Image (cartoon, rainbow, N blue to C red):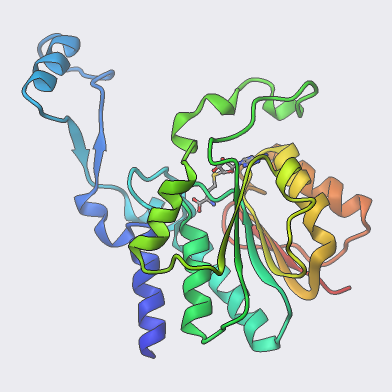
Length: 272
Ligand SMILES: C[S@@+](CC[C@H](N)C(=O)[O-])C[C@H]1O[C@@H](n2cnc3c(N)ncnc32)[C@H](O)[C@@H]1O
């Protein structure tokens, strides 16, 4: 293994915190406390002492498959989907497929950090990494939400709202924040259609929802190079995301094989 390969491998272990699962601390609120005493009083008492109540440890198998929402990691996608992005980026570099690397829906930025590192590891000096997000979480449901999205208002899920400065700081933590990392701040429908991206070699969709997925495909698919990849994080996990992808592919006559990445992710490679 080259030094660059070892660096990328280490980086993936850090971005997922897979390397530190046994040390991971997750806040608990005692809502399911079955021991003696009043949970509210215990919480108050500990708070007054300046203590935090946490559980320790995380399941490395679940983390590898990206099945939990990690408290500290820069990505929730897990090692398998990071390995897959790595193979896509390495394929477009090896095959000379023109274009930048884009993720729509970045959360804390981990996948984009890996993309930037891969360009560095392979000596690429031209391509850019586009980091597209509202940086305030998922949008509220529109007037006509997809049936799978009517029961939950995801815009209220605070943990999904990560501001852009935090994401910049996450890039900087790994020494990977520079002028080739380009932020597109706002709702995809507003930022992507006129984004100054000429060609895309890898387009990674991770906006979860029907409209978020479709907005990204509508705005960017035409710019994906032949030989480039479209990667969809939520195809298995979110029925509405799957519907958006299926609708888009049907509407545009796209028959390139959908390849499963793991229990939720899929990708296809653009052939024409
Ligand atoms: C599941 S998180 C992405 C996970 C991330 N790729 C990772 O590596 O962990 C979904 C992200 O999509 C963003 N998002 C969803 N819909 C959006 C939209 N329509 N416009 C802008 N951002 C959106 C949210 O703000 C959130 O950061």
